[in-house]
Image 1: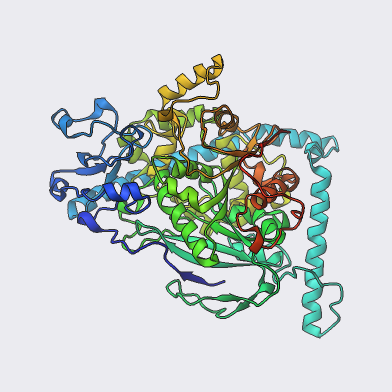
Image 2: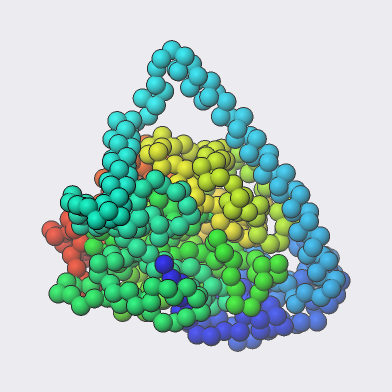
Length: 638
């Protein structure tokens, strides 16, 4: 694999305005661009004590017009009671409560560096203590399962037989052993020049043998006869983020196999001349604390590999920082590099990745498939007050376990603790840089099997899901691509006192939500809804949703009700499905996910393809008609 940097979007000096990063896109939407000309904060306010600036997020209350920047102390909170009395008249009259102001840090002076060092030290100690508490809690809650396993074993029973796909897991385990033997046989035959008959395959693997359990999507792609090319994409605020292209090596000529420099713009591969039509591009986005490697860790039943072999041009997007935080101007020790949350991922990262894929493929639209947090950042970006023009670049938005409304897990005691503490104490405990970076540092020195096992225990404890429907033989591999670096501000938005955890929704406030619940209970919508409370306008693309009925993390059913009850008249829901037994990650990792989810994703992507005449028909889609807006949507409950 090689990496190259092809930057999307026009050049932008990320350290303009006295060294402060922009917190809203200067060119992400035409409207915001026109209204941002006067947005130049007063650099002198940075020199007064320990103050840092905060920028007002575009508000649905003021039609998204950026307000004045204001000064506040480092422990600034959007809550009224924490505001200094002598600065009331400096605060904007309308601040979007869904996206509270982010701190804007000036160029670090000696005094500021000492402050930042204090926060890093306190976070290193306290956040590690919090992590240890979670790890211990996850191990303690595993004791009943261990006792049950011991009891079954002592009575000569196999507890694994209680798993819903026990027979299929055994079959797949046997297939993996056969493939390992076949690879070893082929390797031996190559060494001695022997017969390799029987090793032919439509997608011959170029890696094999015993699974190394590594954090490398290219390695797992080559095990199924595919490969991955890596790109660096520049966001408008200066982050360099990873974009991976999954492709069939038989269809490309490798031009520069040894190109490892991330700064080269020379192409690594070139499409071979062929009578076949081109493939339609699809962009996949990952969930919270994950990378898009989550789509590549399930052998042939990985969504990325499955779509590629079905006949799509698959691209895997990764949000900022990921496994290797990178910025064109800032270092990882600079708090300005970590001053962002999910809104920036939606209005900066997603448009940059989309633009790059379209530039590479020559199409003007692509299909977008997202899971969990990926759906949240997309729903935010497409909303009428953020970056609605992104919808013009999408043929369809496919949401897997869509994260718009909170599930019951948000009321777990450890999440309640994070919601109760003030913004200052959140920063003091979790820092103003990366969120618990020790989790990622463990990845480099811990045995991958132990890391995968521990990762499952911790995430299962935190988010209340299980591996009951997964192939347990691959579980340690699944957690090699999580966690990744995210900002403490992002986790504060998800779990803190003034973000998602408070309102329990990404685009409606707590009070609006209560009012909508009353209308739902009384059946008062009747197909009409005030335009002021609608999230989307006419630019929104068609939607398709796959909801997990047993999802404790998010409430996808409530989102479906919003889209199907007339509350969002501009949203065209062309497909929706509720799989009652599914938990949050089952939509991408369940053994039966191909039949329950992937086949339908393939059909939706093809029926909404706007360039069917120039694209290769995906496998199994020969009889799928083109979608028309007047056609009724399909809804299923399994």
